[in-house]
Image (tube, rainbow, N blue to C red; front, top):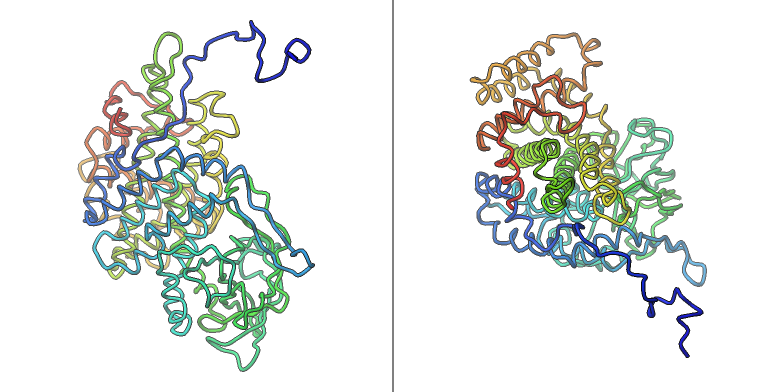
Length: 564
């Protein structure tokens, strides 16, 4: 029987006359391309870092990430979010987080590319730049999966200082064979590590933590302890183990290796209270947990927990910088693709002067963030050199402050390029916008980063001055940049109590000078000069795109950003 007349909404039998228009002038999201081949600046940076041996593998990875199927997985796992199963069918406590299959697919893709342990295991030059490039490529497609990857990688230099633990875990940390099973450590082919520092009452003030650890025997380095307390943010609870800060009997913080399963094969007493309902980073699970006499092993000496975990944070902060640069890159690529194909008022958006100013500003910011990210990665590779350690200690927190904050602002600006299409919740621009703040908050908020820069400069003023001298080598012939450099030098003579209110200005100026120097050394002149001219203009920065483009080669900037 024909039911169309009585059921006009039947989707398979539309009534005549319901087709009101043709769909035109709509632009699909950018996908189906190599994320490496469309990024000339990144390829140049890898070649400068002598990372040529890694380029074939990175090229394959960039193609895999650029596939429409990979984009579809990324979209799905941020919509079908993790769920917590506290108990099994018979009431046994399991605290298991279940993920969409796509989560495991992307983690496996990353692990097979050897991007977890490669900088520590591979001795070839350019390894850290190659790792940063791989992380940067992955972060353009899906960021949540980079959380356990970041913490696992950052745990390696800390675990290396613990001979017994390192001997037991090395092969599983170095493995490229993904193993997503929930099993005791001894039964896993590869493992993931997380971290737990933050408590309700303390936040960034880890010394305010109340979780306590009591030795099960004599105590001391490598000994068993029992942990009791809580963590307000416990990243990626399905990791095979976590590094946790807790107070030892003398009241000083210690760092503990806390596995998900005890050595006897029973589940450790780390009880997941709930998963966090986060603004972004939704594919990844973050949780609140309680330790109820949980098994842990002391790493390092009692009372040295904060320096131990800070070493790990030095690496995770680098990942925050690279991850935010990745978001800036993807936001730019999507905005530029849309503007080149969308018409309004009789012209393509990318042909309209105001839009060109916005896109040029996004392009400059993106390349500057990428250049700084790979320069920092090289410093981690060459950290035996005192000058490179200064880049690690002083520029990394400054870069985390600046680049992560720029990602928050500019993902919103790029979203606006797409108008209403960008504001739709299931589109990539919305995901980038929600994701961006996490890197600015995680591993130390902006103020914490600025305090780290100032404290580092106060402890090592000669090293800071040497860093500024290094930057001056690329800024000598630019009067305005040299004046900016002299201003920063002058601030170092300011008493600490008076300098602290200027912390954000100091960190941002340091980053802008570093980016300007790197672009003047490595980028084409039209990029370096446009960056310096815009960033030194006192009118720049209130909103993106407030550039005087009349003197800029906008066509060259946009073509370099993403070749048409």
